[in-house]
Length: 259
Image 1 (tube, helix red, strand yellow):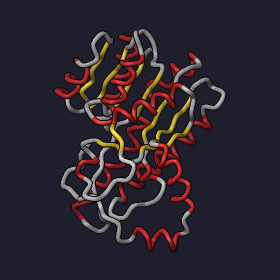
Image 2 (cartoon, rainbow, N blue to C red):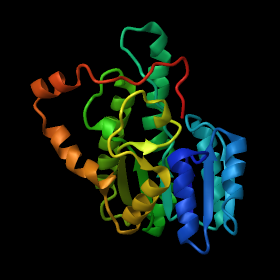
Image 3 (cartoon, rainbow, N blue to C red):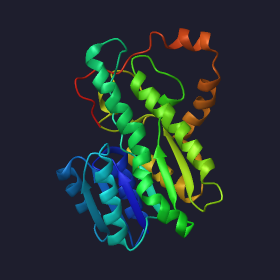
Image 4 (cartoon, rainbow, N blue to C red):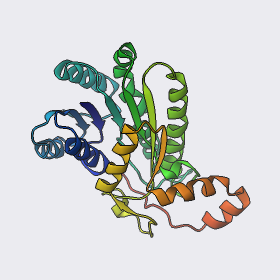
């Protein structure tokens, strides 16, 4: 099996790589992320797999294209699964000048890089009439969370983008899967100064995610209790939503968004 994962140097990306390694006897996997040393660590843990590491920034479209080309050549064909997982988060406030650059960076990584991750592989996958494109969104994309305008907007746009892509590719043989995590125990969520209901470990998330991908799901919220919360959250009238969330705890702002 051939798999390509971005944001693979930790968190959900690392957990997904480990889960595919656990399930696949003959795994060829491409790991892409900014932190070269962490990529080495993750790759070294995948004993027996054919591991290809790509230290890059996913906002560098040319670097992603080179990595995709190299992986296809090294793996002997396009991947069976491409997972656009790279993501960053930080609190942002509109009107705060120092947050403007961060806002753009979050949207670049969480949304635009998702399309740039898929694009280099798509022609070969369509020609083969097989393959799966997986995008990692977030429950934060279902409603706008106060103090997290950039993150919520980027994840809401990712959900809409993945839906558009799924319809575009209908009948092509290429599937599109939208993964919508709730709270997952990672370095990103470790900085949240508020309770996180239904928090699960990254490895547990990965088990459910890979299972959903294998079963052909098109949209899945993980963990399952969040599947109950998600439609309720989306259905709340604006007046009630505003009243409930206006004083909700907020993600800390930072000078640099972190993975």
